[in-house]
Image (cartoon, rainbow, N blue to C red; front, side):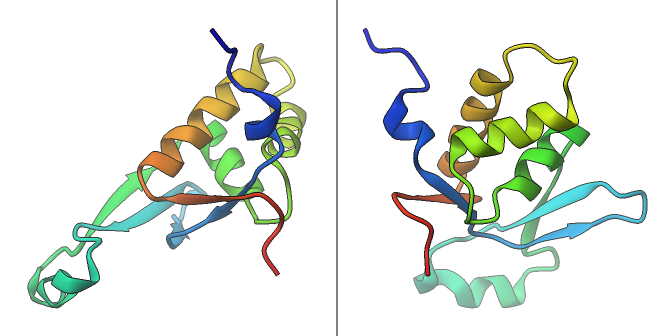
Length: 115
């Protein structure tokens, strides 16, 4: 059984794939279309609320903001550890959260920083 996160995952570069906005109180809100298929994109124009709004907690917001397309997963975890030094197991938690954001289509992973 391999351990997570492995070196391959830690060396990938996460980049935001969907838009976000910052609330008046500084919270980060991710915006995800309810329909991702381009084939059905026309339906979005007919919907009153075409996007899901995912409000992040301060730790999630720190991860999201650090995923700027220039840092590896390991570097993102280091940045988050700098913001939340009192929290234990930052690498594991950050890697799992990034994995969830990728699965939800919020982030994309690259082997090298995109140009």
